[in-house]
Length: 361
Image 1 (cartoon, one colour):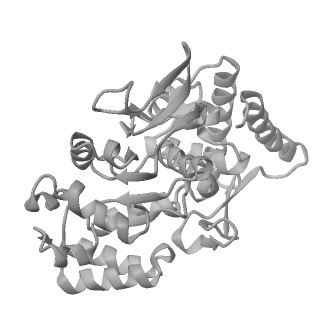
Image 2 (cartoon, one colour):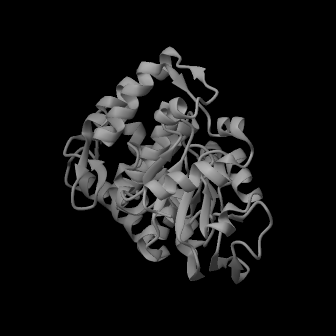
């Protein structure tokens, strides 16, 4: 885990590099990988998708580029001071805080701009935003299952059992899950669930207790902390990971971000992605086999599915077969459509059968 001192040193070194370029009579610049799908490559050694060799440059040789470097310098100063003071802030707060900076040109015009700059600093320094003490807005993602942990908090360490010491909502995942120490567990596997409604159904039906499962609520597109903790479950506890989402192209991308990483955070794939994670459903073939209530594919769904056929994360025999089937039937279904067969069908039949087929149960 990167120390506060190491994180601060990396930031100061980057600012010093700008100064050295000035001193040498050079136009300051900052080079980063190009963050596009065409610059994503499969790293066979790690089994995740990472950035390739194409780069882009933030250079002060244009007004636009000079503004970007000015904003980077102000942000570096803010983050270094934040680490000195042992404080933290949210990405949203950084956006608003820039309005107090003494140079109007350094202020951010939107939160997307400030978010992108923090990602740039992560890539260039090799330090995660969590180690800069930058927090996202609350993700609400939670864990329920037979796991005992020790969590570092501002009020000291505390030990928590993620079934016995929490309510029905479960244990809320902190911004930086590397502050969690695993003490003991009786888990057999990790089940990552897209929707809160399905997570609640599994917990209410006692699925986590009956099958010794760690149920992780992804909360839609999962936050980095959720993906990081999932990876730690796999790497440190040697637990199989399966991902349970709706049956539509956007949900398949949720699985892809858990298993292989995303374009925006490809520089952190080794830290966040769990390439061993497997997709459990809802599969297009489930829509057919169980005659699930469904909606017709919209044009945007069709375009997304066709795009996924070209996405390297989905270029496997399994995904090509499933996506082609979905395009053929023209339907999509939600996780909770399984309730059409009864409220207990998902926990008594669907998941046990699928987990058995996958060799997890």
